[in-house]
Image 1: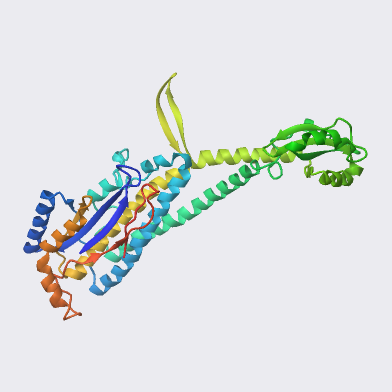
Image 2 (image 1 turned 45 degrees about the vertical axis):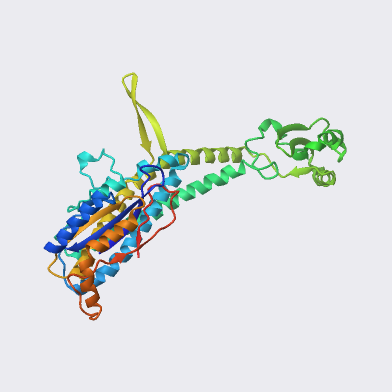
Length: 429
């Protein structure tokens, strides 16, 4: 049996892919010798890097229950792969300008003992040195219970991911909306960061200050005509307070009773009165909201560097991750580790279904060298050719499962994601 999956690891360069094949063969003398021949040939020809993939003996139960688990594990495999991809993409989104450093947060440290947590275990190393986590997934439990434990763990991680990313995206959207208000031209952008209290006549029963947008080519015309656009315009009351590529923002003070007439005449001369009334409380509230959102985003979701001091001397820099980034790092590791355990469970279940009871098979992990997959497949077909004879005979009796059934392939689809370091691509079909 062959399971084929990919990792986008970024170890040699961002987005680089590592391909893995998980194979299993019956554990009798003839097939163990075949595995040894395979290891010898692939090693001499530099076709792949091979390691034993150790899977514990589980409580099998009935063959009918294994058939049900086979279908369930296939769905759980795809779900885990999808969850890991989403978490990796979330890390990239949260890190924003530091996307190139996302890989250091996409590791598999969750399976380490507490005293080894400081080590950074990359995804490839974890797969090639895989050991079943007996503490987290006790092999003495019924196989159905083990699968249920993994499924509940992944479901909880997905629930938490959705909740945390909703909060993050809400904050990000609110911040972007405020930032968008400070961009654009004078017709659309907020003016709270441009105008000041001194630009306006305030608390007057009769006078009011308007803001007028004047095209750049009409500055001279405005200066000559604004006092005569209507009666009761205060002479020499105009002042240029802001400019953009298209025009300038001018103040003008007049009596309240002629506002409508002034607006009409200004429009006829292609001057635009911007509807704006100075409200000091609203301006303060808007500025405080922007400052709060920026602070929340930085403190809660992004990475910052602080200098740790000992006495009066700085002795090292320390990276402090926001709560969301820390959560993503820890739970990406947990989800990835669970996903590889699912691979092990699939190998076990499919091997028992194909090779029968008692349980007796050997699993091997192959990491093909670049451009050697075609030759490697030919070697596998040659080494395990003897299994094809039984497979051909078994076609005549569909209802019979043979212990020595042929090497079967579970093929994978290459999914998009090279722009997302750490993305796991191995969907098994």
